[in-house]
Amino acid sequence: MDINAVNALSYEDFLEVFGNVIEKCPIIPAAVWTHRPFSGLEDIEAHISNFINSLPESGKEGILRCHPDLAGRELHSGALTRDSQEEQRAAGFTHLQPEEVSRMRSLNSEYKARFGFPFVICARLNTKRDIMRELLKRLGNDRETERTRAIGEVKKICALRLSNLVLHDPPNSEKTRVA
Amino acid sequence: MDINAVNALSYEDFLEVFGNVIEKCPIIPAAVWTHRPFSGLEDIEAHISNFINSLPESGKEGILRCHPDLAGRELHSGALTRDSQEEQRAAGFTHLQPEEVSRMRSLNSEYKARFGFPFVICARLNTKRDIMRELLKRLGNDRETERTRAIGEVKKICALRLSNLVLHDPPNSEKTRVA
Image (cartoon, rainbow over the protein chains, first blue to last red):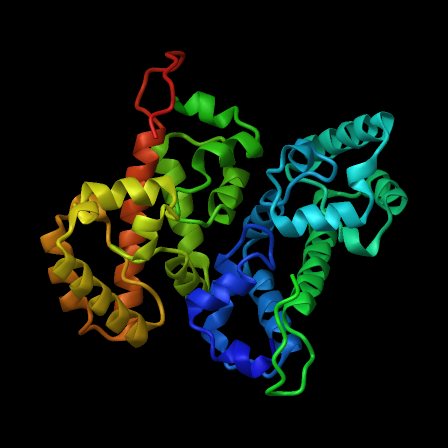
């Protein structure tokens, strides 16, 4: 879908396509639709980033709390969004050894008890080994540093989800959505 | 569930209970969880209201765009949230005559073309006759007036959803959730 096609979407169709670029936060793409027409993918991304930056700190934490645990129970119960499921699979979390699962769950619990939101990292840009190392390292941050770091990861996840949806086609070439 | 029980909830359990008090916007209760402990139902409601007021105008429109059409296709396709389904049923929208359905759809389309968001009204506080009259009347508003009016309705819907969830019990009396 090229940017001209995106700019022609009703808010309902826009949400159908972009509703989950920020995990379980359709309000964000729904807000950004106000700013169309967009000049391109980077423009949509910039509006999303500005919107997130405009939120009070509680709102940024709210975004994080809408994310699932990595290697959490939802991964196996089928309760993840399709995006999350594919991202966690890509990082190798669907094939953990039992001791890796219990290590991740224990670190996730420690992290959530410390910060009051789940550990968020762009799984597509990291291996499961990177992720476990980062989780341990980030546990040492203070809450403000960690909130900022985690929101940076949310934006990376968003950029990758967006780039899967808006292809860099020349105008008028029709491609089907790659989700 | 009394307020002491609410204050003891993890963010995950809080979202399980309160995640849809603003339609399809779990980020809002997720943000408000930061402000616990709450003194009571009105305190939660006030934090939600303040959070909504803190949003840029695009964010308020984003909230509205997360709402379904009244008497829209989703009502019959089963795609509504349980909350919306019950509210629309209570207002009589599950038993419209074919000519009422087509009248509502035509007015909804006109409204969305004019404002770029769907018509939102607290269905539990109105009959279908009131709602159709209000829809016609509000079509005459300018966009800013109408956005403010619609966000007022979102807050009324939220107050009723909250009051269904947090019962005014004396502390320590256990009641099951009434959704």
